[in-house]
Length: 108
Length: 121
Image 1: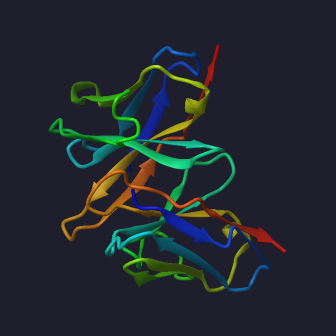
Image 2 (image 1 turned 90 degrees about the vertical axis):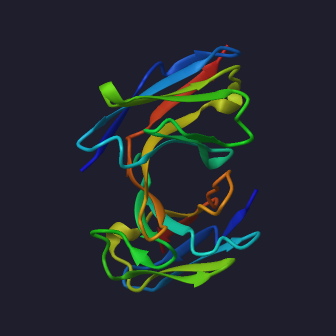
C-alpha cells in the first residue's frame, strides 16, 4: 500500500498569504496525484488532478506541482473561502488507492 | 452535472451488514467508475471499492472479504454492502463518481453529501 504523508498537519496563515502544502508518497505514483479541498460538513471537492491540472471552475491561485513521490499544492494568495482541509490522493496502478491524512489551513 | 445521493440505515448493529445505496441523476452511468469512500476520525479518507457499468469491480484489499458492490443501471443506482461490522466501521460513507479521461487522468469529480453510519450494539 502506498502511504501519502502530508505536511504540515496544520498551517496557520492570514488572508493574502501564500500557502504551500506538501504530499510525499512512500513510492512513486507517477502523475496520478490529485488534490481535494474539504470544508466542515461537506464532501471533498476536486481541485487539482494529474499533479497540476486545475479542475473546472478552480481559481488560478491554486496550483499543483511535483513528480514521482513529492508533490506540492500552492495557494498563491489565500482568500477567506480557502481556509479548509486539503487532501492528496494517489491512483497509481494497483489498489488500494489512498489519501493523505490532510493539511488544515486555518486563520492565523 | 451528475448528482449523487446516499440512502440507507444510519444505525447498524455490531456484526450485522451495512447496506447503502447511491442514486445517480444528471448523467450516464456508462461514463464513470462508481465508487464508495468512507471517512472516519481514526482513519481519515479510505477508498472502499468501485464498480463500472460493465460490471467490473475493484476492492480495497483490507475490506475485500467483507465488501460487495453492485450496480443497477436501469434504476441509476449502485450499492455497497459491508458485512460483520464493528465500531471501527462507523464513518461517513460517500458515494462518488470517478472519471477516467482519455489522457489517462483519474479523479473523483462528483460526490454525494455523505451518510453518517454508526455501528453500535
